[in-house]
Length: 83
Picture 1: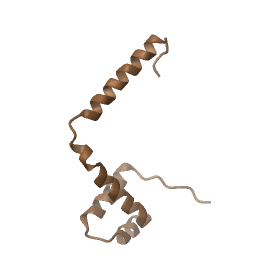
Picture 2: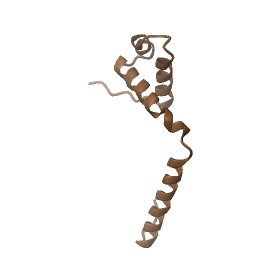
Picture 3: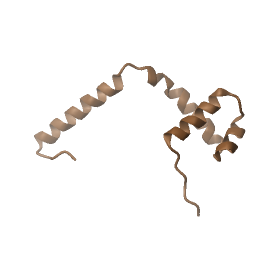
Picture 4: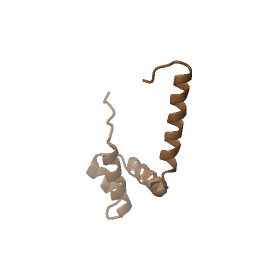
């Protein structure tokens, strides 16, 4: 049984950008990068769906900072050391 390969985010982005460009078919891109054509279409869809998040003004990072601050406060209240 073969081991699953994991691809870096950079590799996934490169494949998705190539699919969006439309210069090659999904099958050609898949063959060039030794992945399945379904993976190419999934990466393309993920990139297109998440593209609008790139232009949001810091809402996610602010929310993350607030949640981390609340978490730290709870750790202090209950006497746990932060990991």
